[in-house]
Image 1 (cartoon, one colour):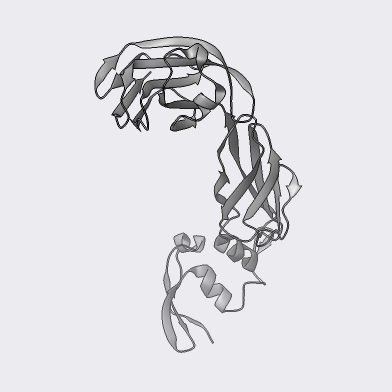
Image 2: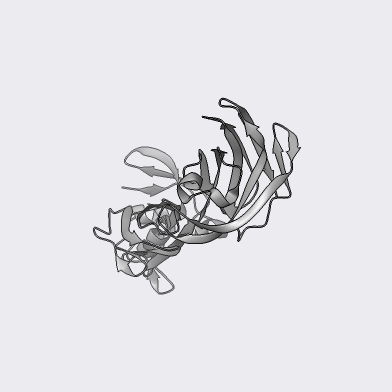
Length: 257
């Protein structure tokens, strides 16, 4: 049998003030809502149109929220076909989940979803619903994007004329990256005698400065079409940087926008 040992003031009715409650011979601090619930009044007392039990459930409800959403890979090369693996973190188990409107199997427990055969930049919206939430359904959604890009390349090739560079030469250079910007620093070692080359999509602005081991290098620039690893052709700028170097040469290349 519960016994109230103090009466609440007006501020305590909000359920935030802690008051002493003796229950089953044990004393602890409890909110007014807990005290009334312990007295068996939770279903009898009305607050507006809701019972006290419903109000308590609403206060204690953690919320149906997506705290994070990721996709792997987040980037892919233009021309590739990939599976986008989405992963989500939720505050509680939902009753329903969708990705771009497609139901997610096992909605209460699923935290991952794979989208096969993605071939272009795509935004995914993950939506969750808790139909059992107190006071009516609760929902949330987040979006994440996989981006398709051309790659940039850098390395040593034993050719001085860009007109003689093949797709295999460029795609086979030691360093490559998804070319979303210009600025970068690369550490390169010549596996054989050759010239240092830097290639990037012509859609990007030219770098303002190249530095090799801290010293500015005047580039020799050539613009020509290039086929990537998937055969997709795009206009590229190829920059030859400096003189021919011997095998084993080590270069820290700074590329400034």
